[in-house]
Length: 92
Image (cartoon, rainbow, N blue to C red):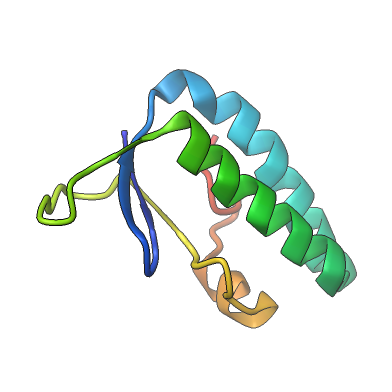
């Protein structure tokens, strides 16, 4: 799976990591619903760091279609809300 982090680039991520990422996504959704800005920021950074750690960066000149698009680390709560589906940022 190809994951794009807005403003950073793309990484190739094995589908087997989606279960762990989905847990962070669920936490992020809950924090957004509660309006907990500091917890939201902490969890967003944890989610993005996990993708960076588990994934393999693609070269800057690679333009693969992204299977999943995640917000930039400095995205606001409202910007992330606009990106959400019923399943959060990560489907599943």
